[in-house]
Each structure stands twice: as C-alpha cells, then as structure tokens.
Image (tube, rainbow, N blue to C red; front, top):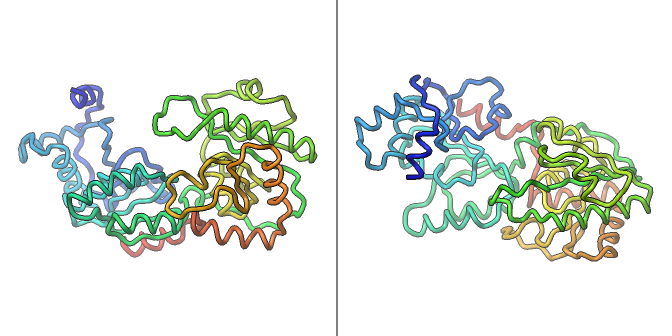
Length: 359
C-alpha cells in the first residue's frame, strides 16, 4: 500500500533515458562536484519519479515479479554507462547492482561519518548470500576502509570528503596566537529520525562554555549554523548572552569558504569539524564518543584534542592544550588522526585520476 501511494505521488516521465557514459544512482547526489558538465543520466530510486518507457518495458519483459530490480536493470541497459556512481554510500542496494548488471564500473563515494547501522545491514546480507560488490569505493579514512573490506568486495581508496576537497584551502602562514574560534553547530529541527546523536542540551552546554572561555581569553567567537530554517534570533535567545558572530547556512560553497578562513574550530560531533582537522585547522571536539559511536578504530574517552567530560574545568584544559600546541606539533597530530578518521585530497585528484583512466 505504501509503494502504491508513492507511485501515485511520483512524477511520471515519458522520455526514454539517454545513453551516457555516467549514470548517477539516486538523484540525491551532488555529482557536479565530480562531473562539472552534466554529461550523465540519473536513476531516481526514491519513487520521486517513474520513467513510463522503462516501466512498460520492464512489465512487458518480466511481469511484476522482482519488479524493482528488473526496473533498475532495464534502466541501466538503456543508458549503457561505463560508470555507475553514487554518493549515497550507505545504501546496501547499490552494492547489489553488480548482480543485476555487471558490464559497468561501480563507484561509491562516502558522504558522511558512519555508525554501525549500515555496516550491520551489510553484514546480515553477507551472512546469507555472497559478498556485496563494487569496483571503487572512496572513503574518509583508514578506519572506514578497514571496516568495509570485511563486507564489500572492492578497491577502497582513502581520500577524505569530496566536498571538502573541492574547496581546497590555500597554504597560509599560521599565526601562533589564536584570535578567533568558530563553533560548528549540529542543531537541527527534530524531523530527521536518522540523526539521534544531535542533542540540543549538549550543544547548548558546549557553546555556553565557549562564550565564557572566549570572554575570559578575549578571543572572538563565531557560530556556524547547520539548519538554515533556524534564525539568528532563535540562537541568540537559546544561548547565553555574549559577543559572538552568527554565520548563517546559505549553501555548501559559502560554508566551506567560511571554514577555510578559521584559525580554530570547536564542535560536539560534526563531519565538517573533522574536515577542518584534515585541512590543518586547530580543533577541539566534545562528544560522548570520539569520533563517532561504533567507530572501527577505538579511541580513549579523552585525548589530544577531544574530551567526553561535561565539566568546565576539563573543557578549558582541552582548549588551552590545543591552543598551546606549536604549529609543527599540531601538524603531526593532524597527520596521525586525519589519516585514520577523515583524510584530505585537494581538488579530488585521486578520484579524478581513477575516473579518467576508466573514461
């Protein structure tokens, strides 16, 4: 009944899919970050649109049995792509496509930090059937590579986040004295069940601590929002009074340009925070689990630039420690942890090289 309702709501398309070298699996992708010219076809998989031409061929050829997979197979055959690409890397269905159509090169790109939810889904599947498959998987760090090698048959590359890599940071002389700190918020309206780790009270505590710390140290404090549906006045009323600058969420490009200008960032949990680390910015993380719950590589509760303590004294000690690191010492910290958690490949050179060799 749910599927019928989705079909009724879907946009019905009558044009035959175009033959292209690249097929994007799932329309919720930002493929323009990798493929600047729109020389690709897209296969929507969330029932937002249904191609009548593909629908009819599927029904006439296969009937209603296993319709969803057969629809995908027909669509892919009509496009005949060299590459099938997705940034929705935590959808197990993508890694089953090689069983449906094996003439293309399958590439997935990690777009967010992962807990065990996706891994467990894949593990349950591999217990019953063959290993999941792809050709190339581009992941954030060594931790994710080690975990995926157990469940997916593919060549796995450590590259960091393609969006962060796209907006590379210009080499600059790092100032020893920290004059400003930016807090990266993860506060969103409570309408997404897939984001249980976002705890408003924790964010409020951290930012209020930051207001106190920055006033004491005479450091300029900045606030970067995540959810553009929320206003500056909302946050001004939510947090303690203080002299801090609000940065609104406009678009991805502006977010990264704002990030690249910072000296230091503080966050509860944030992929963007670990992207800042990868670019060499000083960071401090205050989360119950570092870097994320169920991370493959296990870390202590408190460490070089992170702490799970809720005490202000420990909060201040962590910030003072990070601020006190020399640039040379901090770079050693960056090299160790960014390679494990979230790496950095300026301008996505590694991915572009693989794509160029295929195309």
